[in-house]
Length: 73
Image 1 (cartoon, rainbow, N blue to C red):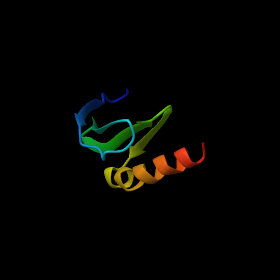
Image 2 (image 1 turned 90 degrees about the vertical axis):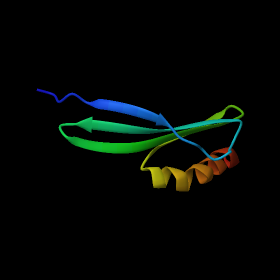
Image 3 (image 1 turned 120 degrees about the vertical axis):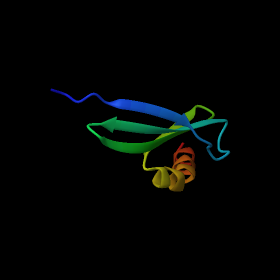
């Protein structure tokens, strides 16, 4: 039998990048165990970059990811 999963989202600040941006912390709980992930999205013109993962890695790489995608256009 599958375990029920509880998911909560909390809006968090995001660096001032691009034209639009948002970021949230997602908390997943099932069977007494929990996991937290961060999801950040940044739009520049018609390009949208979405990163998900550990909070520290998302914060460390969001600007580099946006720069890389915009340079490849």
